[in-house]
Length: 476
Image (cartoon, rainbow, N blue to C red; front, side, top):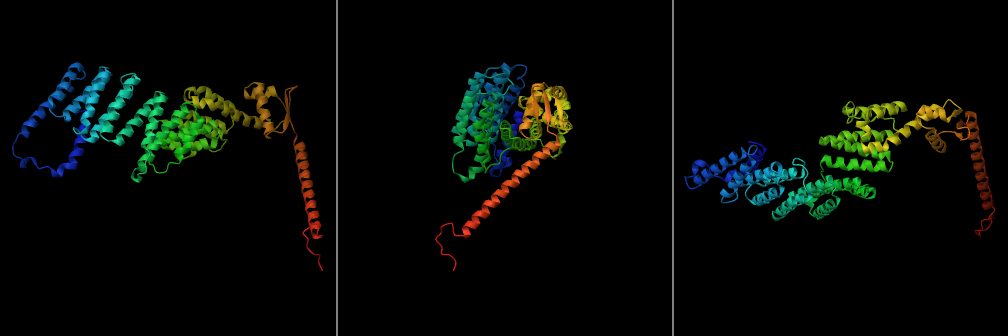
C-alpha cells in the first residue's frame, strides 16, 4: 500500500468514526443481495491493484485498466475515484499528456461531492495541484495551469467549500509569484481580498490569518518589483491585523521584506529588529530561509555600528558555527576589532556564502565604508599632518576615496582639520588649538547670557516705574 492508499484509508477511518454507532453488526444482518455487491467490490479492488502494478512497466496498459474500473462502477464510488487519481498522475507525470490529465482530473472532481470523504478529496486535490504546479514533470504551460485551477475552483464553488477554495487561490497566487506572472497574481489577490470582507465575528480570526497570507504575497511581489512605496503601505497594513493566528513562516516572510524595506531607507536599527523577528519565525517554522535571514541580521547589526555581537542571543547562538554562517561570524569579529584588511580578506575568500547574494552585495560597499571610516579615525589620532597617499596605502584604496572619507569626517565634526589639496595632505588641528576654540565658544556663550540678563533686569525696572501703560494709580 503506497501513500495514495494510506491517505484513502485514513480518510475512510475518519468518516467511519463519525457514524459507527448507528451501524448494526455483521452478525445481526441476514444474507441478502448486499453480499453480491461486496463480491463485486472485491473484483474492482483486485482490478485496481492489478492496474497499479503495471504503472511503471506498462503505463498505457495500466491507463486502460484504470479506465475499465471507472466504467465498471454503476455509481460513482471509491475505486473509481482512486482509478481517476492514478490516471491523472500517469498522464501528467509519466506520459506527459497534460490535456488528457485535465480531462481525468475534471472527471475526478465530480466524485468529490459524495463518493469519497471530504478530507480525502481535499488531500487528493492538493496533491494533484502540487505536482501540476511543481517541476516534477518539467515546465508547464501557463494555460494548462490556469485550466486545472479553473476546473478546481468551479467544483469547489459548486460544493460551497469556501475554505478549500481560499487555499486553492493562495496556492495559485504563490505559483504566479514564483513564475513572476504579476498580472495574473494581482487578479487572484483581488479575488482573495474580496473573500476576507464580512462582519461574521466567528470568522474574524480565520479571515485575519488569511489576510496576513495575502499581505505576505503582496509584499513579496512589491519587493521583487522594487515598488517600495506600495510595499511600505502593505507592510503597515499587516502590522495592524490583530485577530489572526498566522503560521510563523508567513510572519517570517513579512518581517524579512520589512527588514529589506528599512535597509533601503538606511534605517539600520529597524531593519535589524525586523530581521531578528523574521529569523525567529523561520526558525520556529523549520524553514531553511532562516540561515539567509540570519546573514541579513548580521549585516544590519554591523551597519548600526553596534558593539553587541548578534550571536550572543539565545536564538542565534546555536548557528554561530554553521558552515554557511561561519564567514559572517568572522566578519563580525573583524568589524568589531576594526580590522578592515581582515574584513576584505573574508569577503574575497567567501564569495559563495556572502557576495553571491545580490541583497548582501548591495550593502557591502556601505559596510566597508563604515569600517574604513572607523579605521581612519583610529589611524590619524597620533598625528598632526599626514599625506593622503600614505592613508590610501594603509586603507588599500585610491587617494580620491580617502579624500572623500576625510571630507565626510570633517563635515560631521568627527575630525578637526583641513585638507591641503595642493600638497595632498591632511592637516589636523593641534589639541591646544582645539582647547582655545572651546574657550572662545564658552566666552561667547557667557557674553550672550549676560546680555539677556541685563535686558531682563531693565524691563523689570521699567515695569516698577509704571511705564507699561496699564493705567494703574501710583502708590499713596
